[in-house]
Length: 206
Figure 1 (cartoon, rainbow, N blue to C red):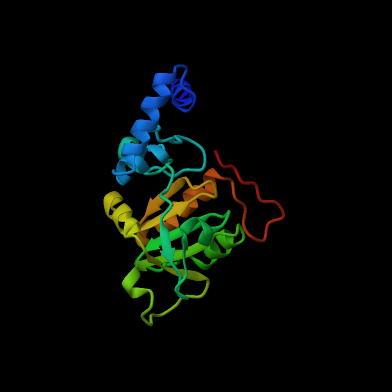
Figure 2 (tube, one colour):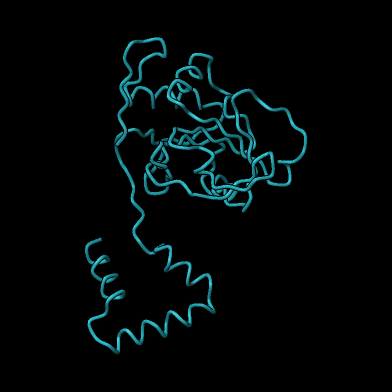
């Protein structure tokens, strides 16, 4: 990362004039290649940070698991038609996000109360074409449309229908409805969460 920072500094403030001219020329050419330009502007070449300990529940091989990695930041369509970033819909909270399913399925009433006490947002993602159709809404669940199709691709890639996301936008766990309750119990144990009616609640996030 230090070498990357030094290189970025040399690009922004090249030590030689001809290097600055070359930089400007390449920048101009990239206007005709939008995907390549976005790749550099968004610095997608940076190594993806990943946690291996802390508030995580990891299943399977770490190399291929999204757990401990940052979740994507796609756009979503709200039921009123507004388009916003998923980050804005969640706020600075934990989130349980379900693809096409009610994220409360598989959770006991005690678990729902425990995680709501933390301010956890429960979000059901559906294909955008379905966001404007009448469907059963679940109390305390925000339904959003997958504006760009990125969420469907993410869940398909990782073979999961539910993801638990931390306030720092890193993936704490993945699950399916049948395993969500057990997964949340493991995460609560790692974070040493107390019951909602207890006097003190301690939260540990790496």
